[in-house]
Amino acid sequence: MRLPFQILAFFLVFSFTAKGQLINNNLGKAFDEQPFFLSKEVKLKKIKEIRCAYFIKKTGDIMRDMEKQSVYYYNEKGYLTNVFEIQDPGKNADTAYFEYIYSPKGHLRTLRKNNYAGFTSTNYSYDTTGQIIKEEYYRDKVLNRDLTNALFVQDSLMDYETIRYKTYPNQKKKIVYNSYGNPYLDFITYTNAKGQIIEIDKKLKMTSEINETKYYYNTLNQIDSLVNFSSLSPNETESIHFKYDAKQNLTSKKSYTNKKLIYSTEYLYNKKTGVLSSIILQEVATNILSITRFETIYYD
Image 1 (cartoon, one colour):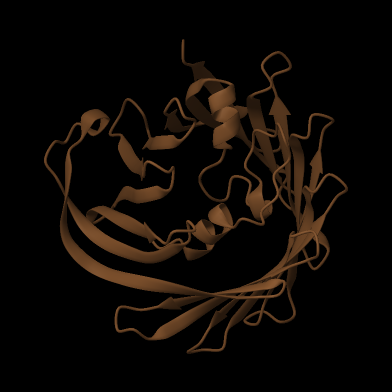
Image 2 (cartoon, one colour; image 1 turned 180 degrees about the horizontal axis):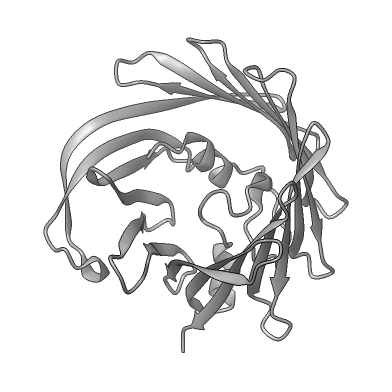
């Protein structure tokens, strides 16, 4: 599972996160990429598990169970350790599995998942500053099929990439090399005088494809909005706008294409505990609602 952009966004030292905010909206990626929740807040709230149930509501119809469940497990440091995504629970269940293994310094060392071909894992190596410098992709063998206590062996190395960095005033360049030692992908991150990320450009060297994201902030250093542009769709611009409550929790996300509203998302919180209770996603064109309900389990 290749995650150069995710890992870059997760570990960049210039990233700003509002104090007390539970949802990880780092660089506007709320619920697009794991981890969904900030480890400091998970640890503070002593969250052990978060269980999700999914529903759908069409116009003129009742709300229906999508027969899908997800369970997220956290250790006492607040780090995400396992994810189970189950389709048709109680029947012929199809389970997606993710495992996150960390170094003593808290860096993600191994990410393991299953897919149609079995289990694969990605190993991450870091330099002394915490930057990823190598990603290795393995095929895994399962020695114990009980995934709640599974034992894995990295059976064969399939591929790997190495990463180098160059730093300039208000600019950082990440260069990704394939296993033949050839550079094929660049990420260029631009920051302002406050250290805020204001733009990330992704460039594929072979095709000259460019994906550009610009970031805008509110007075509390939270992501207020972002704008995406791709050279593959030069006449199409995507933008996302965010809103927050007085406790600095994300409450609203609206996605536009060429200034036309496509999706509207609302985030609802438990008034007593402050944890997320529901997400309501509306597809504007069809008015179909997708609802996710959260149940939180805590450490004693």
